[in-house]
Length: 199
Ligand SMILES: Cc1cc2nc3c(=O)[nH]c(=O)nc-3n(C[C@H](O)[C@H](O)[C@H](O)COP(=O)(O)O)c2cc1C
Image (cartoon, rainbow, N blue to C red; front, side, top):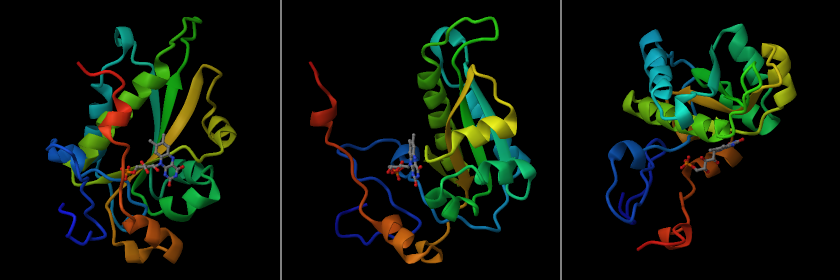
């Protein structure tokens, strides 16, 4: 998107310093989701399959997921664990996905890169979602003890994020304060700040 273009509420491509694959520069995290949109079995399968095929240390795959589609008890349990700010908008998502790091096996073998591996899996899921014409919004603002209790997670299973998945809706569907954030300029640190050494 050029600087002179007015951002529409549902398309907010990144202003990248060099071209990158559209699947990545067109991804963004809306809070306005269509409350009537349904995630099909096929779409859900594709999202989870994309997560499944992400890389992990030693191919240990220390990530687990709890998935609830809107209208189910699982969705309600996840939604009721979100902090108020997130609960206010995420109820319109088509699905909520709890991302869980398996920090050790039941035998006690540690999985020190579990959080990293889980993040890679969710990154895959978000890109697949975009390829399916969907949007995602990750959240850490969650009362985790509620998630642990609702799904009986054992000590070695650490929930780290909830990802809302759905069909983006116009920002005007949101309350004013949220709508403003929805169309605020997107920004990132410059590469010069991120890359410590580049030869
Ligand atoms: C681990 C993680 C936790 C986040 N937690 C929240 C959250 O609790 N509530 C929220 O509205 N957004 C949350 N976000 C969304 C970020 O604010 C958002 O990704 C960031 O501002 C960049 O915007 P973009 O995804 O549209 O590029 C979270 C994102 C990540 C990756």
